[in-house]
Image (cartoon, rainbow, N blue to C red; front, side):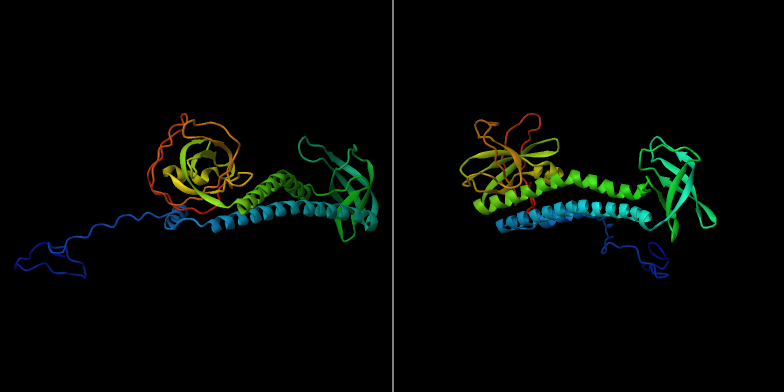
Length: 332
C-alpha cells in the first residue's frame, strides 16, 4: 500500500484489499482493552448486589433447606455402617461356603511370609485332580506355621484358586480395607453431622417461634479467620458476635462496610438468633461486657450508612462506607 500522496498528488489507493491508514477525519481506533474474565464467585457477588432487601421468608426457607440437607448428609453417612456390615458378612459367608460345599484335600505349606507392616501369608500347594496347584492364603489367625507342615485345604471346584484352610478364612485384605475405612470415617463424621442437623433444627424452631427483626451489622475485626461483627439492634442495644468455623471464609466481603441484617426477635424466651454462636453483649459505653449468650443470623442487604465501631485490640478496624452486595443465603 502507498503511504502519503502519490507522485501525481492523488490520495493514497487501496491495494490488495489492504485497509487504508486512518486519516484526520477518521481517527484511529483505540486498541481494545483486555477483557477481565469474571470468576463464578465475582459473578455471584454482582448478581447479589442487584437484589433488593432480603425477604424473611427466604431466610426461613434457607433454614429449612439447611436442616434437610444436614439431615440427608447424616442419613447417608449412617447408611454406610449397615452397608459395610453387610459386605463384611458376605465376605465371611463366601469363605464359609468353601467348608460346606468345597473340596477338601490335604495340602502342604511351602512358604511362610511374616512381614513387619503388611499382612502375613502362607503359600500352600494342594492337589486338584491330577495337578498340583499352589495358592497364597492370608493369615487371619495367630497360628504359627513352618515349612512342609500339613494343613487341610478347601477349594472351590469351579475356581481352584479360591481356597481356605480350617483356621484361615483367606478374606481379601483389599476388600476388607475398602469396608473398614469408610466405617471408621462414618463413625467419626456421623456424630458431628448429628450435632450439625440438630443445630439447624434448633435455629429453625427458634425462627418459627420468635420471627425476625432488622439489625445493622458492622465488621470490626477478625480472629483466626473468623469475622467479628457488631450488631446494632433497634433501641440502641448492641451485640458482639462471631461467625462459626464451618463458614469462616464465606463472609470475608463483610469487611467492606456495614450491612443490614435480620435477627430473631428478642421477645423469644430463649433469645436466640439463627446461625452464629459465642456471642457477647457489648453496650456502647462498656464494650466487651459479657452477658448471656445470644445468637444472630445476619442476612446481608445493602447499607449506605457508615459507622466507626471503635477498636478491639490489634484486630479492630473501622468500617467503610461502601455498598455491600445483598446476600440472603445462610449465616452460621
